[in-house]
Image 1 (cartoon, rainbow, N blue to C red):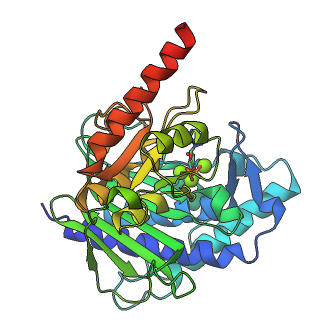
Image 2 (spheres, protein in one colour):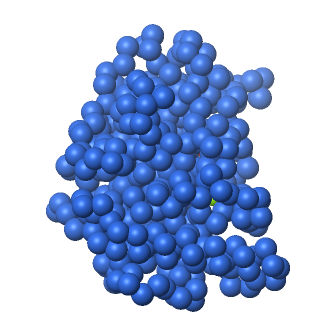
Length: 353
Ligand SMILES: Nc1ncnc2c1ncn2[C@@H]1O[C@H](COP(=O)(O)O)[C@@H](OP(=O)(O)O)[C@H]1O
Ligand SMILES: [Mg+2]
Ligand SMILES: [Mg+2]
Ligand SMILES: [Mg+2]
């Protein structure tokens, strides 16, 4: 199945959300960032982008479920003046993004002239509370993946994927701060990555609708480089350094926030995306990997957990008991799994000896 309408709608929704997040960044004030219960940040832009994308999806595919990262709980109970203003700003940004005339290659505006009420937009955010599961159609949405990257002016990605019966079929990611040409870091920024299962991985700029095919190149061992999270709390930098030693990798790791790592890997930067657990019992979320893993697979790569097991998108909102994430091209991937196993064996011998 080609999912042509889903692809067009997803591209349009992600581009709208990207324009919104970019416009917010330059004007963001501290009061517009809330710390969630798990101590992670969420900003006015995360809420507004989720409101926009869920509104578009609900209009185009009213029957589809959505597993989105954010919920509107904080905005529904505005206990302080700061939250009152945050909610008002979310509403204004979302309505603005929904009513701005579309580029010629996008679907038309979805508000059809009438702004959404605050209640409608909070309900749209909360359409993302679906619990996930083994069967049926569902969208996985990360309105801003890499919120910490967004806040520091680094990489972040607006990520949307369609999952049907636990299998990711479509992935669309917008990376507003990623250079269109990886070899020209100071050139035009704003890349959209689109993958449809069985149809390949593609990239385009925000400004031109032409999709260019991506194929992961063969990388000689002397050019291996590890892509990893900038945040040491999200993946083990110490394991990564043992890993680089094991494979005699001399290049320093390429650290980057968000699923821009999958995007960079798919277009030939780095060679191995390594995300090993930090040992705090964290469960990876499906919206952090659905679109990126499909992009890499469609570009000719393999994505598994650290034991070589496939990622299971049918377990609910998380990837369950999976152990880390490994993405690499097909020649390198088995070497990665082997090296991880060897390091783990050495570590356990060290502990018992
Ligand atoms: N202890 C942990 N281990 C792994 N990932 C974590 C984590 N705590 C948070 N994350 C996830 O890491 C994502 C960012 O990944 P990266 O480090 O590759 O930029 C966050 O996405 P959000 O920024 O959407 O919340 C969050 O879901
Ligand atoms: Mg988050
Ligand atoms: Mg995320
Ligand atoms: Mg997020």
